[in-house]
Image (cartoon, rainbow, N blue to C red; front, side, top):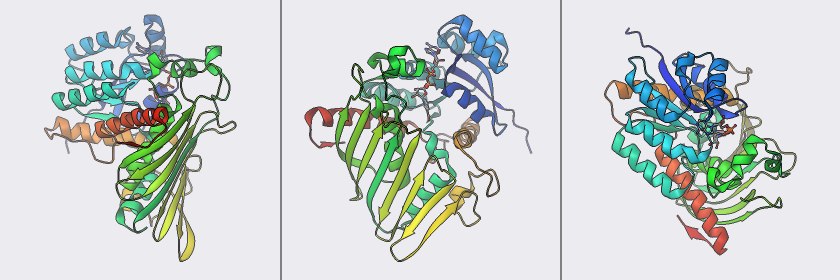
Length: 381
Ligand code: NAD
């Protein structure tokens, strides 16, 4: 069997004190298929080098600017195979386009861009370049989310009638941005974040999960966005009603002022015959309830799970897998797609991995929710 080298990753963002950049490194490297070799980790050259040292990369490849990184890396024989984008949202489009134009694949964090017009530009750039582009909607990587998806799309629940998704956090219950806290500061600045506050930051994850698990699209919504904390410039609370193409209706609640909540993402889907209930804070258990039968609790790694769930399980039952492993599932699928693409197959990323289609849907969701809230009416997608 031919020996494959590891794919080389260059990160943009993930500087000192960053949240998600280090998670990307851990997740990408978990399966031994990828290694971090370069980065423009911060907009300060010194901080970028500091992060590079912390990550243990060759400091000659810790760049001060993402354009410099892409330019220098494409000249190297051992240059990066893909760019991971872990910056505030306003940089997602320019970094992705610069990489795509250089023929370098992209793994971007969500939301795909800062605004809806930007994502249409990105969609065109992805199509033109013909280069792999994926989006880290982390929750799609959990094995029991794959199980929920298999249950819903196999028809076992019968016709899907109702969905209830909630994503409740409490960390912005106070004006944290006014203290200069890094993650809160850019998230409450429309120029760096885009127009959707909580709706864009976590509402997009909830929205993605609904369409991903049910396998049907939202066709219209009626949303009420609010800014609860005085002085905040973007919404921090969102309540929306949904209608879906399969006839189901539902609710989507997203809030960052749900005091006391941590990362409370929960999805419930109700069909004619039964329902599923999954919580991100208890991710190794999926509740399945039947109209006429006992309640089941399915455990991650159970031998009885669907092939889709078992394909993304690493450990035997009773050994909890969590956020980093779910993230790593997306990286493993990305690496497989990258390998197939390098072997000459177009559109090589697996359909289980969120990509540009999910990116456009997420940005459309933000734009539609803002419009619905502004006009206090139902809006079509
Ligand atoms: P953060 O503020 O912790 O980190 C952002 C990093 O980008 C910082 O290190 C900052 O120095 C760096 N940066 C800013 N401008 C830069 C530039 N011009 N060049 C290079 N680096 C630059 O933010 P975060 O919480 O890690 O969020 C980053 C992104 O990840 C956001 O888009 C966010 O929506 C997304 N995110 C996704 C998940 C998920 O579950 N998938 C979770 C958290 C955050």
